[in-house]
Image 1: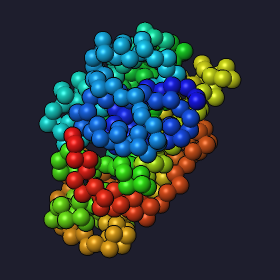
Image 2: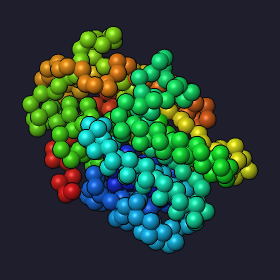
Image 3: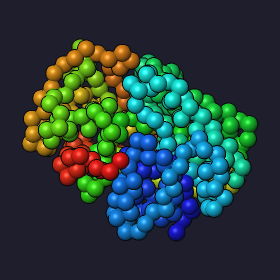
Image 4: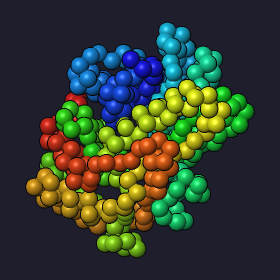
Length: 348
């Protein structure tokens, strides 16, 4: 068994898939989650898939005493930090909630990590930190700016991580900037389970396909793209999960060879490097599922951009990681999950 990892927010969509990837890579995991937008059932299913129970602790990253109890009873190599609120629209309506949870919560986590001498972190960042990109594909040196409080909260944490490594070079902090995670585990047992009407495109499409929603609203059909609809870099969630394992392996390798001081703050894009339009994704999903996807065009949403896709060269060169699964794979796995779990995990 390799090192022990604390996974905050490990009951969520990306967290559950990463827990499986970590287990398969030999890591021991402890999941810490307040279940505010996730389900205990998701952890039960991960346990079934890996064939052994996962240590799960219900708690909030803003609760310093609860965090101390976790760190005092385990010897962690590092933390993968997923815990955070993630709905753009909700962040505009409730900015204080997002700054309190995503920024203040991360500060508390970092303070407790420092107390216990745990200085390795893989942070769940986002391509939203790039705002409306000036050039494509987007690389890690692109200008950062945000158009909503959710994105601002991710960017604020990145600045905190940068400043921390400047003040103390014993920290090794990787910020993985995700593009658009979609798909589900190939078993159909775990996947994306939004609490209400989905905010993200793929679960919305799949809920239309399964009959839960009447039709898809496509926001904007007059963008300067291949078919007028927005273009995004969709990445399979299991590829994304492997990116976290690759980041941990990189940290271990650097530390084992005495290069810890050179890690510092390291931002890395996780994407496929290819753009797919909304209409192209709808067509692919309809073909895979055999279901019609009724849609209508609506006005552009404020803050939406025409195109966004990654340069994933840094991840390939530094982490020896690249996305392997196709749009067809993403649609097949999303459809399997939705068909097998029309009401998600049932238990909230």
